[in-house]
Amino acid sequence: MSNPTDGVQPEVAVLGGSGGSQAAAGGVPDEAGEAVLPRIEEPASFRDSWWAAERRGDTPPDLVLEIAGMAWAHWGAHLPGADATWVAAVVGGYRRELWLWLVGERTWEQALAGLAGRVRRRLPG
Image (spheres, rainbow, N blue to C red):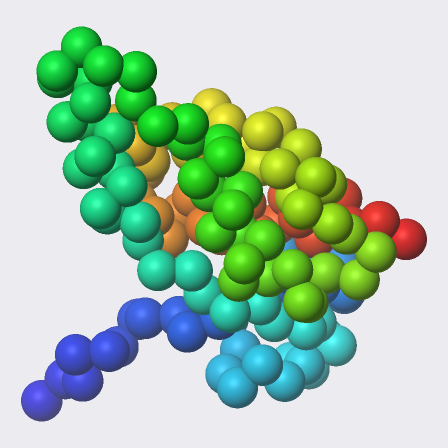
């Protein structure tokens, strides 16, 4: 019998080390010395409200501001030398890939892993 949480990654590794994003449990460094950031749940309600506004002909909520706010709220304390403006700039540079999640061409896990890697590569200091 399989566990319903098989394959679910509770955290995303993004700090330190030289490898890409890797999962590690409990927020402790893995063997490569990478720290981990909490996983951000898929913002399905945001995606739904974005599409509802689009269908009505209204201006949809800003994708970058929404994801940047979530990233800062979940990861800010784990990003030494960064601030909310820095996070917003990094997320803004990842706009096209987030759009692919929004339109269903990428899963949230793919988008989140890519964003985490982008944060790791650009972390100040």
